[in-house]
Amino acid sequence: MKTKKLLNCAWLAAVALVWCPSIDAQTATAKSHWVSGWSTAVQAPADYPGAPPLLVVENQTVRMVVRPTLGGDRLRVRLSNEYGTSALKIGAAHIALVRQGAVIVPNSDRALTFGGQASVSIPAGAPMLSDPIDLKTTDLAELAITLYLPEKATGSTTHFLGQHETYVSAPGNFSATEEWKPSSVTKSWYWLEGVDIWSDAETTALVAFGDSITDGYGSTMGSYGGWPSQLAKRLGSAGPGTRIAVINKGISGNRVLHDGAGVSALARLDRDLLAEPGVAGMIVLESINDIGWPYIKVAAPKGSDSSDYFLFADQKVSAQELRVGLLQLIERAHERGIKVYGATLTPFEGVNTYTAEGEAIRQDLNRWMRTGGAFDAVVDFDAAVRDPEHPTQLRADYDCGDHIHPSDAGYKAMAAAIDLALLKHLSPGPRDRQ
Image (cartoon, rainbow, N blue to C red):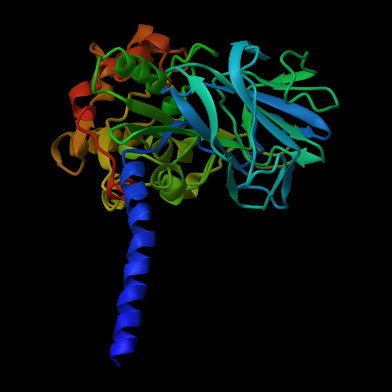
């Protein structure tokens, strides 16, 4: 018996010697963590008037330009085959600093690997993280992520409204080539979901969660004029203590309670908020499409005896139903220690989906946001951009021209309406405190 006890003590002592260094390593690692520096909300292609044509490539290279709001020395890339129905073969993947357009900065190119391999097959429905790589970047520096697709692939996992042009090559692998002439140019991102930055423990991310007004529709292409980008600029010049990445998770046409362009806000919250590394807060600007879409009128098919009809007439929602949906977003975010800031809905009188009934719902929701206390704080975008003489409309100089989406100046006013003092108190949620 004594011998057995002695052996047990010796075994425990040996285990302690092995484990102690691991504990020290975990403590050291806890001083840094992964933070989403740039990300987008992926979606499946949609077949409706004005939607981008479906990308089809084979033995071609696709170069996409993104702009993380925070820089660092170490990063990783997240690819996605979320809406693919078969495995996606990536023959090569590279990342580099952008010099101009599709041209990368000399000597900045880095090959991405996946489990040490240069190529990877991404299963249908799955994301894929690259191995970390060393590349020194600065805040708001553009990066080129270049993918070589050796086999036929369709852009089944995309984000329609890219903030920069995407370049598609002639046949061949140009993933490491500094400069090549594209055979075509699009305005969407494909199979690309995010860029994470290895940063100190106090660095956090704020998700801008919404529809086309968050996505930046109506802003000048390539200017990063949407309100999330302009908020990132404000934070970058706010001085010490404001290392906060701003992540744009807007999808043009998104709704809270029904699928539209992209699955509903309730369906995508886990992927687009809760699964993002380092997120501490969210500004949610959703519901205007829930209000307006039931009044979208479409032409009847040619040869039909029917007159024009309302495509989503059976999807009308009440203010109470929208409150329930928004409360679900709040509660699910709060479970992860993420603060939720509600953004009031901006005016939309002048579009063909505007109705007095819809305006009443918008006003009801805005009153509830301002006075109901459900959110951690409220950002009053409505007050920032409405016409003081006609508050159901956008101010003329803040209107991009379609009477619902702001201009660059309107988006700047929205970004200016956000109290930076709210954001300075954001801290990583419990899952990030290792």
